[in-house]
Image 1 (cartoon, rainbow, N blue to C red):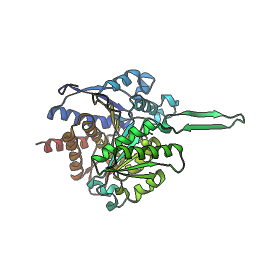
Image 2 (tube, helix red, strand yellow; image 1 turned 90 degrees about the vertical axis):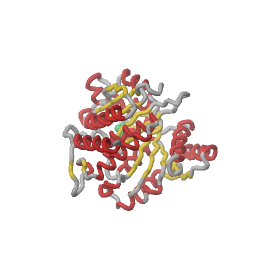
Image 3 (cartoon, protein in one colour; image 1 turned 30 degrees about the vertical axis):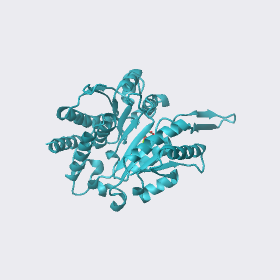
Image 4 (spheres, rainbow, N blue to C red; image 1 turned 60 degrees about the vertical axis):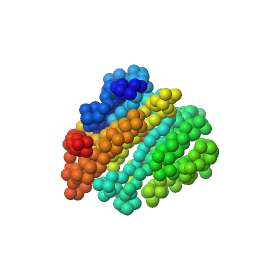
Length: 372
Ligand code: IPM
Ligand code: MG
């Protein structure tokens, strides 16, 4: 990619609250174009239920091809009650899982960071969560989400039996662990590798591969192994012991949801899903808020756009190395919250409750202010 070429972004707003939060994130995209030396080609497409409504499938081949050809994908949220009754392969989730798999986005980064202004919104005591900064690295394209055989069969006696398969290769474990160790080096230099080696064969292999890799390449990084159940407990007991947590697809799904409550709101947390870099250093990537499509409150202009906006900040950092711009957005989010405005999900006494759009307005204003 030439230094001054437009960066190709595929924009997938998705369902219910997805387009609402994406509208606000796009305002920040346009702000960057106006105020910084960067230009984007935006290719907006439907995914999930919206794609099903339009094309009869939650992910079209064209959208997949566009995502693969892009520099980065920005996604809102997918799914909702309208689509819950569809067969599995037509459900919005199937579109998202296919996109992750086909783009080979094996490393899912989920930062869990507390915002000082929101300490009271946490269900834990402020001193337990203040200053928290955890990076989850969840394996995203293998494990029980994709393992074969899977399905429900009817036995000779007429009762049914269901099978899911947890499967990992050495290569799959190694590449995601490398991402975790590399990230730790830029942070507090500590990795917790999480599995259930006491029960599962995949857990045994996971521990062996991570231990060998550590010995081979990452001895300068502190490594601890932890059982997944204990990790769940430790996350609410003493979350500040963690820096980087690397774990499989299913444990990562559970533990990151659990951890996402520590800062007080799911509506604040972004994520990045990264592929392997090619020879030129280019890597496929997708950025999305952790929260879902919030069907119960969608369409009313009340959802929190900050996770989508922070996802765009991650996009700038991880896909384009624009650390200053990413940090600028993060600072603006801190400041806006410090100024006392809140969307409904993070509302607390004495604060001013604002709509999705007003939160977006305040953020843009703060970006203007910060950049003089
Ligand atoms: C997530 C979500 C997805 C997952 C669903 C929507 C398929 O919970 O991104 O964590 O289970 O991976
Ligand atoms: Mg989840």
